[in-house]
Image (cartoon, rainbow, N blue to C red; front, side, top):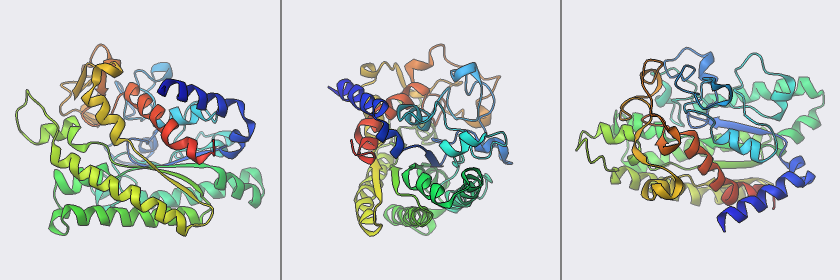
Length: 351
């Protein structure tokens, strides 16, 4: 049934010109789950522009994506008939068509909390709005008409995915924010930051937004390693998963309230927790063999510069849920995208 629905929605989008007109552009904000290469152009150690990252990307090119291949924005852009991949905004070689059809402003290692980016020197979500303002200016220079720019922005699909780094860097592994908040208070702090960001995007003309929730953080290989418990059993950390679910519940409740305050907006919750936990609990159903370790190196610690050309990788990445100790493989991202295409993005285009 799920496969049938996926094919039906895909057919309707690809064959209906009106659907294409409604979503001519994709614009992406957030962290490494959606960063298609912006960190290549800033001074930070949080980079993925070297092998083995990208070994399953077309041409086996390490683009800066933290995976063996494509990310969710790439699959969504293809699904919606916009383009094959979403380029990073900071790429100086972007063509006019690439700019107008959509770019990514995300930065690996960032979050809604500016403290998350303080040490790594990446671009926090709050500063990605400045890049977006520059984008609007450049698009206006290309199309030469302010009304056309407004139409492009208002009909664009906006994707926002962040929050995981905030909890990992500031609450669990380096508990700086625990000095100020309990977990519920920190959830509310991040949601307030997100709410302000959405309102800024709205003021700049954005109307169709999909906001991703948190994944099961306690099932990330890095988090299981950081707990220093049984290295063989490697079970998910239920307390961190419960925190993620509580945050997601608040987010899903907040977005309709926010939409009601912003006329003509569509703001949809994108649940990535459920498809990921489903893959973890029933790996064979989705073709996975390993869900507790990444494909790169030992799979329990390696990420970013620790996953490099000298690091051995597994023989069959498609059988691994995680590429490194934090990020999913292309196979997992593709499955997440298919879930979102059915459950979320069809709502934004009135199918």
